[in-house]
Image 1 (tube, helix red, strand yellow):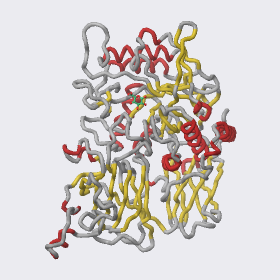
Image 2 (image 1 turned 180 degrees about the vertical axis):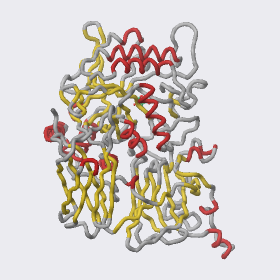
Image 3 (image 1 turned 120 degrees about the horizontal axis):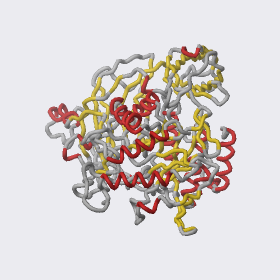
Length: 625
Ligand code: GCU
């Protein structure tokens, strides 16, 4: 059984092996603002709704063309009522007016604000006017679920700060900055990225720039629960690591209760507002699993603050080439999916209903118990749906293909993104795997970069499994193709994973791939984290199989599944991909038209022939280990 202590030692070895000591051996990189665990369950003022928006492709609102500060005629973030100022001084020059700008309903990507925005990439200014209840006794936190790719934020003309990363939450304290009427929240969202960003400019998915998740104003007591990580340990006890923020955080009485388990624990925080509880439950725990996704309400009282989360209790580990859930081997019958709702014109706005629609199709349609939420942290609704529906999750940060691995600043921002993901979601029982990257090119800088990320995962969450989509090598051996994992990152992960496309990319014939051998380490579980073939729904061709027909995709699945059956350490698979998804790289007219067509269902949810092939294969594996 691989437990936390062994894995931490393993991580240290990996660090030494990759000479990572040259990397800044700084302490853990943390989010810059409050963590606000379970923020989505906190009462608050939802600022979804009508926002003004205004494009700024040359970023005049951020800086003048001369390089200095933006001129007064361009300062979209100023707390200025432009219409009034122009009436007061007809000679005053303004070349923007956020109050008069068009309106869009947020959260949503700007792609759907107007037809002209469909392919816009760059900077868009957003403004939300709102009234607020001012309570001098409370602290006010402005929390963004996500803004893609970077966001700079002002409230009533005061700059709050900037966040990078399009898929993780960020928050600013705005206590004392709010007014009762007419607050002016202005956000500059920029989708521009370079190879020094994560993800880099070239990905195989639509960027979906904009404010794509909820923005909420959360009022809290002066001292509140900022972080609470509650989980089941291998020894059957429940651990709770609590972090209090505020002037009264030291020596504060805290009470944790889990009513259904008869747990009612009182203790006092240390000088830093921290508290670690190890609780022996008085009643038997109904452990979380796909067959029984039991969730418990966990409540924490600290001073005036009342915090709660809805948590499943289960254990995870690896034993040889098996993944153990609650001590029992489990085979992960999975599928991959992007964060993109069903429909002909998605805008990356995943509501509870949109998340359920996707996950129920995977669970009840395919018979899946596992989803790879590619290639970046999905929103809270998706993770809460996975908890509720009993879907095991692979969650990942978008360290994807080629980024500047040799740039310490890129490592720093990636480590922060990883921490933001883990600290947001580590109470989600559904998450079993944290992936630190996808198909990243092997090299000394990259090897060190990735091994460092794996160590961060172990520091932040030693009980979950680390993985990554690794690179493979291939050679002829004894007259047949043999695939090996040639990636040094394999040493840093608990679960080996590979994306394979034999029979789609390259010249392999489907008839041959069943003969391929896989020469894999036998001491770790192995997943096919991707395989897939494109098919346009309803496209059939006469004569021999043709790529992009439904028949070819179905044949590809039969051949690849047959190959998978020959791998003794196979612990699961997450074929690419549940649903056709937008990708600007895919422009075959009449077939792709800007969509990646490897979905088993079309963008509007219609099943292709290959859907049944996978569903039948999973049906045979139901209950297998
Ligand atoms: C890659 C990559 C995916 C991509 C897929 C494809 O393996 O990880 O993001 O969409 O292949 O080519 O369709």
